[in-house]
Image: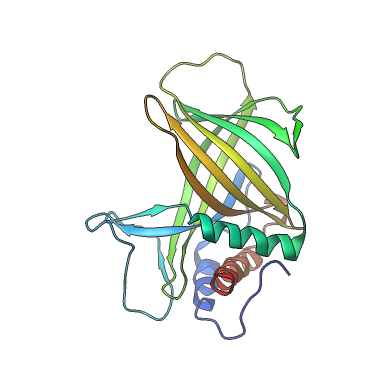
Length: 227
């Protein structure tokens, strides 16, 4: 299995809490994601730190913020783990352009070949965000529930732009996909910044609240074991 749950895990409390606050079912235009990253304190600039042996689920805080990225070396270890457990990933090169609250997504290549997919405009509206501080793990988790509207790109755009060039590896499982992405962020008149991101997106039609809650626990346990 790509994700493994430990028999005795402090992360089990995560699943119990998510089963209470996550929706029983998803609407057709909803998506739910789990991201790796760190929860930071706005005032100190350091990772959140609480003396606790168990994870803390944070539904709202004005003094904390989440950064969805991992170190390059950890990214490589995570990718190698999923490659061994699942097999070779699908490789995509994507250029995302952000403008006026929307994202233009253009898939350039799939597995080294020119993609035939047409660019689309995507608008996301947040519904729920849950941050999970994992004191025994190298990374925290963010669970995001959002509504996603996708439409054809008309080619008529205005406003300020920022670009994210993505080199993505996608590992496909029966009920979810794991995306590991190297991102080069380019803003006007600034040097590109490279980050590494890891996230899981559950297939909308396969979402079951209890299974999703277990999936979050399994991801936390797997990352703890891999790193």
